[in-house]
Length: 400
Image (tube, rainbow, N blue to C red):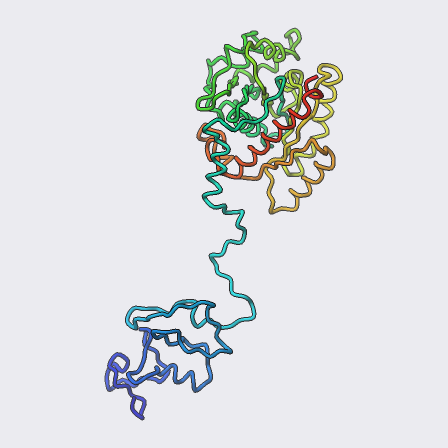
């Protein structure tokens, strides 16, 4: 560099006629004068500015200690001045706050390792059949009911049934909802013309002629529902012993089941009454929102009426919290209210909001087989295991 500010390097000078400012930096990094430091570094050193890019050489660079915090462990870095860029961790300006990488996960449980997910999948699918859930002494007929729609009745019925069947229990699902969503979730044909639960209720067809084995799930059968069931509410009005038609159909089945799950429609009509009369236990799924609690008293009152006049063995045995969103305080408040009111009847397992649970029916599967490593599948597996263990501990009070 000459005394008048000109450079001999043609990369920087361009031409002898073009004056170049002392603070002008060449786009290529690092831009150095042939004899040592670059012009920008010299100007910065004169001004006392320590935030300029630090020059990198074959070893760890010399850096002012008070202003710059290097990494704890920094291997020697070789920089090619034609292609290299400065590592982001070198020359970091010291700040009061601790440095946090953007790639550091905030919660490890939100993104479980693949090994953990694979272990859960093997546990849920149980391909060897060696792991079994406790089997009850008598058949447990459970009615899954809630007059509010969209709380997870069908999803709960399907996934609990699959979880129990995969672990050694013989399970029958009775789809009593005219929409036929439980039949869809189990991939059982339920189009017009297929024998369904309507034929059992109205035409007294034996249940074994209607039940279909679920493909891919051993020990699981389903009685489908077609659109014909929508007219059963009116037709049952004139039928003798209309409230106990389903009871006689289940009692006349020649085989033995460990569990019979009845998926009820979102109403308190004759179909739901048939289910309450046929069942020994009521499983109530409750969405963790205010509206789900609003109509719960009416459901409990109807259950009490059925117990007094039609089925003295009926009992609300299980409460399952569904669609739990841990990000909201409302979900925690609803959970505390339900646990304070129902006590031990509320399962410890809580079903979270999980997209896999919603995706599974579109493939004609339960979440247990669609994505067995997901949080939804794990939660339903824990709920099924808890139900099975409770049935073994208290068999007399529920089946007497």
